[in-house]
Structures are given as C-alpha cells and as structure tokens.
Picture (tube, chains in turn yellow, purple):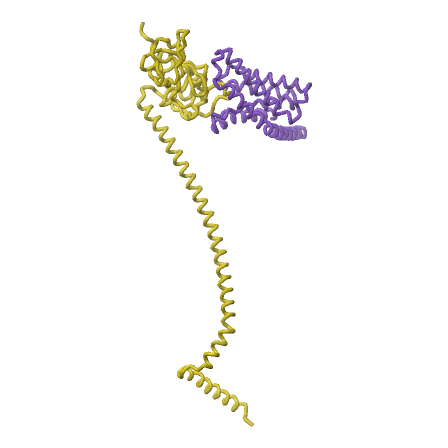
Length: 278
Length: 173
C-alpha cells in the first residue's frame, strides 16, 4: 500500500514528534509516571552499577595497595640499608674520634718530651697467658734496640727484649720477669717494681720504717739504666706491714691499662743511668 | 709441599692465638691452640711428619713468648712422645676421648709453666688467680677440642689429597 520510502519518512517523522513530546515533559510539571520510571530503573540498575563500581574500586584499591606495598617494601629495604650505612659511618667516625684523641695525646706527649721517640702499634701478644709481652710493628729499621724503654702518656709500659728489622718484642712491667728501679714520689722511698699479675705490680724492698701510703705515686728512679728518671709507673693500692721482716709488702696498680694497649712509644735515646751521689 | 702446609697451619694457629684471640678479648684466657695439633700429630700422623713440625713450632713459640727459651719445644715434645706411647696401651685414639686427651695436655703444659715460674720466682711468682686461669683454659679445652678435632681431620684429609695429587703429577712427569 505504501512504498518503502514513504514508510521510512513516516517513521522518522513519528520518532521526531515522539522525541519532541518526551522533551516537552521537561518543561511541564514532572509526572508521577516519570518518577516511577526513574525509581524502577534505579531499582534494577543501580545495585548492579554499585556492585561493578565497588568491584572496580576494590580491585583498584588492591592493585594500588599491592604496588604501594611493593614500593614500601623496596623503600623499607632502602631505608634499612641507608640506616645500616649511617650506623656504620657513625661507628667509624666515633672510632676515628677515639683514635684521634688517643693519637693527639701521643703527639702532645711527644712534643712535650725531651726524648726522641718513635710510635708503634701493638700487633700481637704473648702466646702464653703466664707471660706478658707484646709485639710492636717497629724494629731495628726504625732505630729500636734491645733494652729501649717503652711507654705511653699514662706511664711506662715495659722494655724491648727482642728486636728484628721490622718488629720488636716488649716485656711489659706486669710480667714477673721485669724489674724497674723506682721511687715513691712523695717520700722518695726507693724500691724495685716487679710484675705480679694481669693488672698489678709489687713494689719490693721498701723499708718498713719508711712512710708510704695508699694512693702514693711510684715513678722511675733512673738508676736502672733503662728508664729515664721521673716517668710515672703506678699508684700504691695496698700496703702490708708485717711485724717480722725489714721490708713492707706493697701492691702497685700501674697507670697503664694493659688490656687496652694499642699504641706505644719507644724512647730512642734513653739517658745514661742517673746514679745517686754518694 | 705437605710440610709447608703443616707449618703454615701451625703459623695460622699461632696468629689466631696471639692476635685474633687477643683482639677479641685479652681476658678470654684461651688455651694453647698448638696443644691439640701436637696431640693430633702424636695420635694420627706418622713420626716423620710430626717430629719436625713439632720441633719447629716449639721453637717459633719460644721465640714469640717471654717464657724461658725451650720451654714450649720441651712441652710439645713431651706431649708428643707421651701420647704416642700412650695410644699403644690405651685406646686414646677414639674420637670421643680427644677432648679429654687435649684437656690433659693443656693441664700438663700449665703444670710445667707453673713449675718453671715457681723455680724462677718462688710461689709468690704465680698469679694470684692462677687456679682460675688454669680452670678457664681447661674448660675451653673441654668444649672446643671436639671442633678442633673435626677441623684437623678435615684439614689433614685435604693435605693428604693434595699431597697424593702432587705425587701422581710428579710420577707422570
């Protein structure tokens, strides 16, 4: 009855008119039909939308969190590494500061001293716990000879008992085979300081009648021909006066901490023995 | 070659004793690490291997220490000979007995040192805490000598393999 072309044109016109009618609803009072339609659509579609949106957000959240976690873990590792490095640096700096202070004391001491000295590092100790020697990293090549005195700013350490071209063996004053001619600084009482143990010495041959008290300082007398006069040895820590016998027993705590001996000074021009005038 | 390896290992033990243990703590009071080596040579190795190494090691230790010259060499020789004779009578070669044997060796060495010190300086010459010092060494010996035995077994097996390899090479050439 109608041609195909006519049908298409008519359909288009109807659609346009309907569209116009629908659009015209926006300009007239909203009908209950419209709101019911909106509600119906929302009722069916919105939950799905919400679900999908939630899933996407959840996935996105998980995804981001995973990557955040990976980043955080990586960052954490970096920070830990940096922290370890900083700790190492702080340790190195504090160690350097301690070494610096120790060496400064050595330099000051050396500058103030009238003796020619050479500084050396302690590299090893005696293999036997019964004897007290250390090996230092300076020897004949540095002018060190057997019998030279060894000290640190705190006091005397010992004497060289063996020497090679690059190393020397030092017998510490706490070794029982070592003996140093000494004076009590306050009373000028003379005696011999001998090694006794890990940390102690004995002050032998001090007469009973001589006044020596706990806390008195013992110094080298210079009569033994090894140590120059006036070097600090240790402090009197215990006195025992027996009723019998002509000498008192005196325990001496050296000023030098032999457990922490790291660097020492060897006196290269020990003076000739300073014997008392008759 | 083999003797050089033995000697290098002895020097390694000496350095450990005089430097590493000292750096760790001077108050450790560890026993003489050469004693287990001497006993190992005595119990497990042939005479021609043990004797020269022990003599050289003893001399080196004497040179390093302030102890009277010859004391280490003498102690090592006595230990070597004593345990070499002992294992013919008692089965001290059992691994389980090794800690006891080493402890006995350490005790023997300390007694010799004490006798020498008393002869030189009298009884007051001994450290006030001599008993503690010996006790600490013996305890160290009891607990660490099994590890020393494992180390020595492994090392000497390695030395033997290297030695056998060298022998084959020289025979082939």
